[in-house]
Length: 309
Image (cartoon, rainbow, N blue to C red):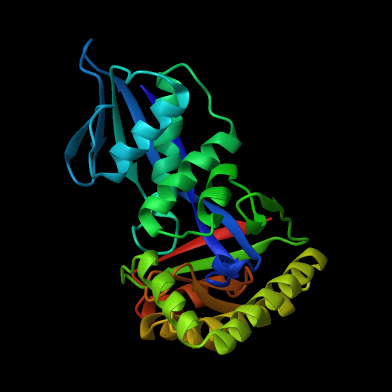
């Protein structure tokens, strides 16, 4: 038995605008992970993906056309490796809530790809894995920016511009982040599509919002690299307001953001696709407990803590 995994992610600044070529800052969340556990199968049994959450066994046949994202991902990896399906059972499970803006799809795809490659006697480079997971993201989301797969595959904070233009990002001082889960599941594809409709209906006005988000990402980068946490928090709040203008926030997200700020969070915003899912709050070690309690009182289903360095 072998175990392969990939982390969740949060976007600190720049979601949605990144789809239109603006920069974004994202970081992995190592405490929330997707796992692929490999077990030997009987000779001739082939590759079987066992989705623990759904209880389904999914056989992988390279010649078959199957409308299933996990099977398609497995086929994609095997074709990339030019390898036959190994006699292996791969069990998938995840700590990451689905449709919550934490990159659950990209994480499970990355863990699965690593497991398949290892069973075939290969180790995928990060570049190849990123390409393969991005293809899966296109299947999930239609026109993804590539930020989810990139931060999850490389498992490091990044300043992202596009799939081939990103760089490591380092905050000068540790950032203490709380992640609040609204419990509302909202597929990213839908919110991205709705912003696209707004953009097509009123291009000049929406472009101003996207430009403003992009400008705040660049300023936030400078603030974080120089240790100006106060400015970083203020820019989070401004980013949230701009995302709300793009109609991708929700009453649940707004309530959690307001609750965090009311008890001393340095900054707070929705994170990811929006319309539900998760928000983040920038806190200090001294305020972390009270902000966490405020989020739970305001309706958060779960609250996780993360540290960014």
